[in-house]
Figure 1 (cartoon, one colour):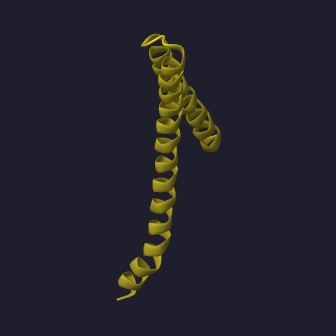
Figure 2 (cartoon, helix red, strand yellow):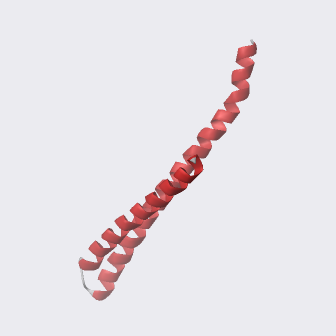
Figure 3 (cartoon, helix red, strand yellow):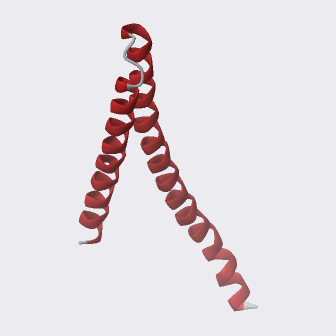
Length: 84
């Protein structure tokens, strides 16, 4: 019975760590999606205003991809610092 009690006491701790990891990954996904969507929509909007379709939309896609890479690099750099 003692082992069962220890497992019950560790469950909240394990659940809390899992929830923190989930929130970290969810936040990363939202940052990546937001950076991509922002630049794509900005390119689309500029194309509509200036009549340069699809030049600025494609530029927005490219900038969105660059933004995604920058967010990932920042996250990886931060994770490597935490490990050291």
